[in-house]
Length: 399
Ligand SMILES: Nc1ncnc2c1ncn2[C@@H]1O[C@H](COP(=O)(O)OP(=O)(O)O)[C@@H](O)[C@H]1O
Ligand SMILES: C[C@@](O)(CCOP(=O)(O)O)CC(=O)O
Ligand SMILES: [Mg+2]
Image (cartoon, rainbow, N blue to C red):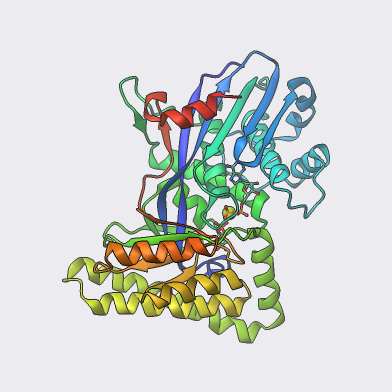
């Protein structure tokens, strides 16, 4: 089977409120970032399947003749949403050499790629196609900005497109194009399978933002885009403390199991924080924005940061972030799984550039990366090469 070249991209995300609680059926508010992951799928005639993941120093290929052994176990057709196939996953784990529970970045990414590739092409009597997939991300890996979901959304979109399960939406004269709602739902459900391999127990909020972009309210798999949101200025800080979402999600679960009656009110409170924040944001679009709106947003950030510490996903580096920004009158919380990684700081409209610059400098002096970001970028897109930044094209074509 021969496929054409495909370029796709998907955004990372910041969770405003509801991380972890969302895994346990509570509301989360999340927004896409202007940082994206880019994927190039190239048809080859080498009789191999290759994956190049320069962010995590992973460059691998396999002979199709060897991968064929996995194809017959996949059933169901690519157009269908299906549950993770435990048998295929177990056999691939053995093949890749990933023991159950292993957290090696490269092996998790490889396992996810092979699983989605075989699921996309392994069904029916078709031959597996010879191709190479290269992914380059502007997002820090494993830092709470949804790099895993941006990766799986890109993989799902490109592989489903190459297999013919979804259309190739890009017209000859277009630079970028998006899929229709039904096809986006299929991409999202496949990306969720990938997140299950990487995270163990994802809520689905990250792949939803990677697929649809913008700001979303997410509750138990239900995705509601928030179309009327005020323009928020947010500072992103990466403490650079490495952590794994999978470990942190299971740590919170253990705590809930150990102290159910203690933790339930904490999760309910986070749910109420998300709902109250959504209400304040909505008021900010229908009435003149006042300092009171910002005071409320800041207090909600502080309360949630305390709750996240109670859940056991704080870190001294995140405490440092909160303390330093507070000396400038700014409020911060961790975003994503916590345990290190990134935090968000809300900037007020009146926060001048001198204050922002001084805050950024203080945070950099702690060894953190820090930058003001714009939010609400588009979800997964197909690109004509001309619409991909030259330096990214160069990385994607290098291997
Ligand atoms: N650019 C990338 N290339 C390949 N794999 C990636 C990339 N970004 C993320 N991943 C995969 O996602 C995992 C990180 O996911 P996770 O712990 O959820 O952190 P994050 O907060 O960044 O989503 C990595 O271990 C890797 O397997
Ligand atoms: C902790 C959680 O709420 C968000 C994890 O985000 P990230 O992988 O740290 O970017 C988990 C989830 O929702 O699946
Ligand atoms: Mg993740």
